[in-house]
Figure 1 (cartoon, one colour):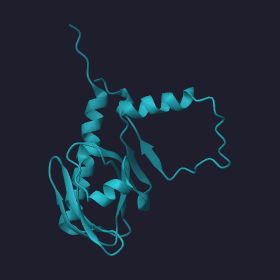
Figure 2: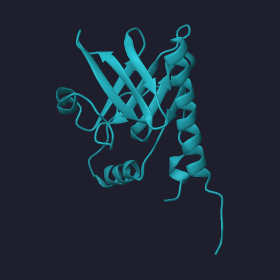
Figure 3: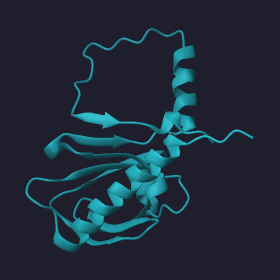
Figure 4: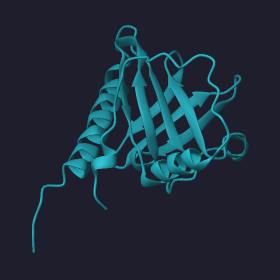
Length: 154
């Protein structure tokens, strides 16, 4: 039986570990300087806990911003919990690392994107669509996004 190194899974774990380390530092010391985070996660992933009204508003995925006001940031090996302000209403969230889709710190143009095989299937379905794709203005890059999950074997 041939053995190979699964670089995709190794990078996947390393990227999640990096986010865990960053969030642990922020939980302990606060956000340094102009750093802030945009974190997108799958609201249907196992272990995600958000208010029903947020789930109804964001049935697939949700992006949260950790910047000016946040409380109770607790980081574990599985994910993190945090209380964020939504229209002057504090809401607790539990976000497992396995639910993450993107992690971006625009202050230093750093970003990570976690692709799943479902994302690849969605892209293939979109490619099968014969409808013309009119994009009047292509999106401008906001820094480098590293995505290595497509190399991961399952």
